[in-house]
Length: 263
Ligand code: OAD
Image 1 (cartoon, rainbow, N blue to C red):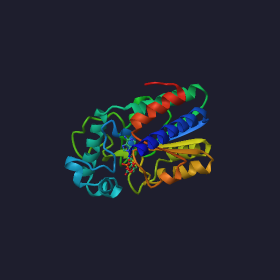
Image 2 (image 1 turned 90 degrees about the vertical axis):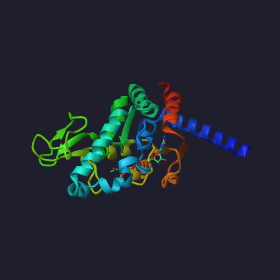
Image 3 (image 1 turned 60 degrees about the vertical axis):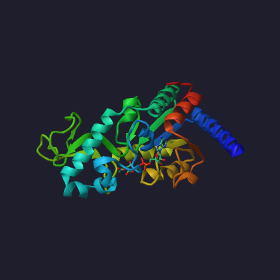
Image 4 (image 1 turned 120 degrees about the vertical axis):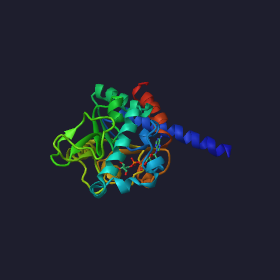
């Protein structure tokens, strides 16, 4: 058993050096994150079992326009509980490492684009600047009548479903199943994937499109591809290099080795 473990440790160290080297030399890095990057902040991932009141509902049941139309009270209450929960959470070392890598690379005239499927706002709170929120944000809600967006909201809302100043129902500013991703976010992602020479997917199960297809778009542009995840995903074989472990451990190590930044 021990020789196998030693072998795995050596292979992992070699893969870490390889990825640090890629990060150190890339001209345009695109990092795409999923729920796994926020797991160490205490936010359950989508494929984790949800606890308490919500354990009997799957996100797929609640995260649809039909669910909101059918039961706006239930859906808005669920999203407001998630909003209140993420406001209590803090960015973890993985979020900070990405923010530090961005500022270090930008200072060196290199490009760094962060695409995220997360709606928790933790990348922005950690200091990342060029963040594309593909699935929107939990902290911005919009009026279903006028489309006006609201950021300065009571914590929590006093009633469900909440009503906007315009008189329409307020819905969370997130993308639901069956809805298109925000056009500006998709444009920014497409451009970045076309131009990047390194693509790194962190903490995503790779089952929800279009983000799951980004690895193929990046590879078509000639980019090297890296997957950082606790475990294998359905897309693992499509990546050039894979790193297994917690993003909160691996990203700070990569930031240190590739850019010389420590948290
Ligand atoms: P998932 O919950 O599907 O997957 C989380 C991934 O993170 C899994 O592959 C885990 O192995 C990995 N993971 C967990 N903890 C980790 C850690 N500490 N370090 C590294 N990896 C870790 O989340 P997403 O892929 O983000 O969409 O889900 C994609 C989309 O599906 C979500 O944005 C959401 C959901 O339904 C919408 O709501 C539209």
